[in-house]
Length: 312
Image (cartoon, rainbow, N blue to C red; front, side, top):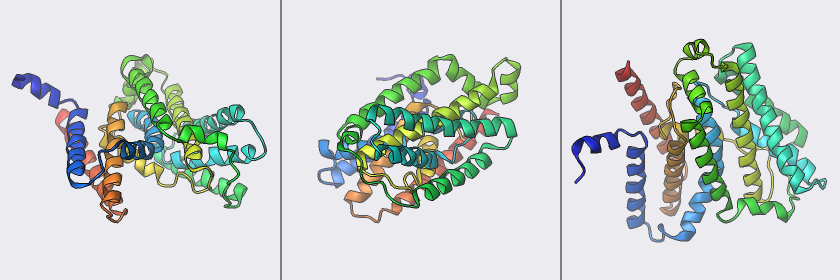
């Protein structure tokens, strides 16, 4: 028998209620949908949550600092389309992957530098760069798909490979956020930027770093996208902005900055993947996923607002 005080402390951990909800939803689908709890279905769900999940890790870091990045899907598309133009010209895979990741990092750095130099809110800067990156890639590719992708690029998007990579990234960034000076600094920035400056934290430096990480992780998700689909489209990544924000906020990261966990983001991504899988197997209109995700976002932000008010 667990003592009441200990049980109360456990339930106060942000991720526990979400974990309980994920388990309840899984049990509900297992009893109502034949074949839901199978290894094959788990593989499908793991592939569905991987790309948005990796983007969401970067979004978590950005939101913890009190910022936001609406250009993640556009950076994904730009990086893989430019990389794809080189791939079809024969660039080897060991050069293509670093080039795509470097492109993502550069695009993220552009976001970060604009935010710290121009002193414009992140939502405005990244909304603008989102349109610039998307418009540029449509001009460069003329809206055409890149289909001549060699088979050697498919390994990273098939089987459990993307999910294993996702889990490794989760562990690394959760450790960085909880145990390293990097995590303490970005939490301090999100909690009170002025206090962080007075404490000697190089605020601008760490802001640029989190946007670089966001761009790099978006490009990495794009590499997995190439491996999974076998082609590249200029419209790749559309909607990833809202999906990643949904996963992060549902996972317990405060929209006001200063708190959040990568494990919570994983649970948020998993919940969204379960909902999509359940809706698909129940033959329900897929647009209902957007409705459910929207409601979950509103509930998560409402709870976060109430928590902030109680804390004050």
